[in-house]
Length: 112
Length: 405
Length: 112
Image (cartoon, rainbow over the protein chains, first blue to last red):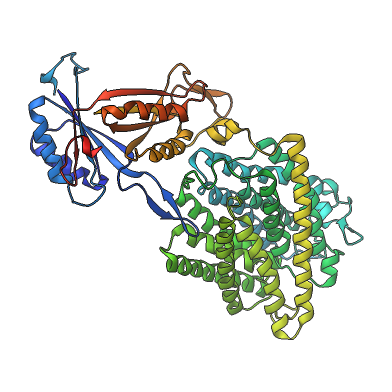
């Protein structure tokens, strides 16, 4: 199993959720995070002049899927979230050793 | 002496309006500090409401307004509000119960030290702050209020005009803010760390509640419900509006019109019109606001450029606003509008202009020197500055044991 | 590639960001989290008396780097965040199999 962790622009979340839903990927965890990449931060207005915000609001979407589905999920995320402008985000894929459904105690890929 | 019910109603309502300004100031300041110090910053204002209420009733009022001693200070005749009752005091406010006048003045005595708190937010030691505030009200506010507003006060006798506290409130607080900021020093990480405002809507709420309360502050200072009150109210609104718009335009010309800047501009304009509001025409008030916003704006830029952490710009907003307002009174005042006033420079009376300049120099100099000494003394005896670790964790948790959202 | 996940004291974030910037690690995601370790919680004031807060505010910093950079980043984090007092936080290192930059579809070590 893999965990796919995508850091995306907040305004893309609804579109992404719908696109994933449509392909049957309904389970996910989202977190409001702050991030920075090559964009670094932005400047905002103070009373006079500006101050720098080093981290921008982003959404982290986490999905755990079985190995053979990970390419499909990555393709969906890119399809929805790629605008070509800086700050589109990144996708990280990492291995997951075990999954357990708390309600039933079931384990493994059938839980996903 | 007969009590005038209309006048009394207006002074009582104005008292309540001015009392509202102190919590409003807490919100105004609270929204601009980091989240970990939000409650602490609000507390600095609201605790003064209670602390100075007690101080004022016990001895503050009599020092400021009690029977004069040598033009310098009031006597102790009214200690604990002895002899201050329902009957009007003919010299201060005929037609209004003496107690109502006392309560109206109490609201001013409360908000003035609260203004100073903007200078030392996010790093103040709470107990040292309480001691400093008590001393400040006793040794700076009471005498300056006596000089300018007390019967027999020496600046009042010279003919100085300060309708609602440009010198008594805004110059004393603004200049003292400079002195205390010098003693307490910069916040850790100032100029390096990201000091993101915790809640700008809270600041906007505070600013516009202040605007609302200012109708009582300036309008109520007529101490009667008549033409002068109406004129002061209109001038107040005009200057706040002109200053907010001016700030927005300057801000926009540099980059974007920030809501925080717009709100700050309103406060600068309201502070500046305070001493002039009962003596000047509505159109003069617009001009007072425009100039106030520009002066305060560039004062903040200068303050930031020299890296001086007078954190929430009490001097730029209130000190500069108050100084400009007292001078503007000497320029734009018209005796035709308020017979209790005088003509200013534009109406053929340079004498008033020079008295107003003298008032600025005396009040600013006295406030700076005495505040600096008081801050040094309190710092030595009780410490004015929070401990390093308290500052790191945030004063909310470290000093008050509470945290916000 | 590895994900370095550090739970740190919030007041250390700015300093850490600058130190990582200086070494060329400018991409990261931060999340306001609550945590507890050996410190357990702290006691805060209620109207009268107190209540117990079992979780303290912390910041989670996530940085994905090439395997060869892991030690450098850990050293930087330790240099800034280790004060010797309880509550300094912890660092976790996890494997990451794939990274995708959404804007360009680039993959792999060059992206981090």
